[in-house]
Image (tube, rainbow, N blue to C red; front, side):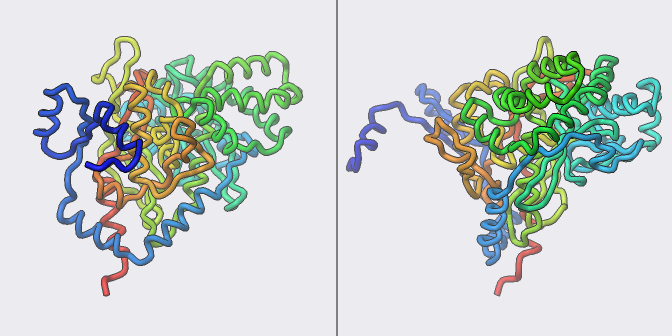
Length: 473
């Protein structure tokens, strides 16, 4: 062997790192010799998938379509311009509820989704007891619609009801807006399916005090550049999904003077400061609509194989792709693998739920874990796992977002623009880090961990793209 550089020599002087795919004979042999091995769950595409893949790869529109989609994502902006009630911002009427993920009915809804809907019914005064709320929901006395269908996103169960207040963000480059509810904090909260008295009381305070106060402060301040805060928080150890500590504090710093000058009673301002400052996840609900704006800009490009949404409702996992319009491609949601609170364990966990995977779809969250190695203390694993996750995601992405730089990777941009063809061809699925909701309605959060989408979402999307591709000459 000829050494062509000093780097080659260093490779021979350190322990090897081995990744294996396919049958386990090689991996087992290396492991028996105490060699660290990463086993990849890879299988060659089926004949049908191979035919679809070849047809899509041969589509003459694909390269330019993906360049267009990526450029739209990278050129998007995200300005926080208002905070107002969902009834006003989204036109929701009594009995209308938005939820996370692809479309779902009450009959198929998971425990946390049902619990959150029960809580929303109580909060809106449409039922006096949980039992009454369940009966009314089972009887069809509520209209359910995915958040994504109205330009919104919601974490976990993602329930948005008319009286809830929402952040309103604008993409000035493309003239669009997106919305997200205010973050309640952790533990027993509506988005995790809890609906006890403390949950309803908190929601009422958020609508009566926090929402109006924030709305007044944002309008007094003027537009807040959320993308700029996201870029800074990545330099400070956040990844934008399950770690938002720096982002939350930067937002609070941005709005503190405006909250004080809003004329609100000093107690209300103090309560708002305590609530936001004590809720490290508060900024997540601004990262999500910022990502929604970026990806919505890339929708509807004929021939593009870029994923523009990944979302879960606790029963189904769904993706949407630029070149196939608003169609959902779904498969069964998986139970995350992670760390559990207290005495909870995997048997208490509900399958994956929430619109917050929009962060990974835009190159944050699990795709940016290298920027936030401390995240492993929340979702499990080792620091090396966080670095490896980001490196692995470059292989299924179309571009790098240099605005979102990862210091430990020599300021390389985060992997951005999930490509359906690369996912199917490599067998590598998008990495998502997430909270874990209890499967029984009313439980709340039971842990946090890592999860990937079901493979069939991508093979189905590939087949649809193949059907839309021009015929071979």
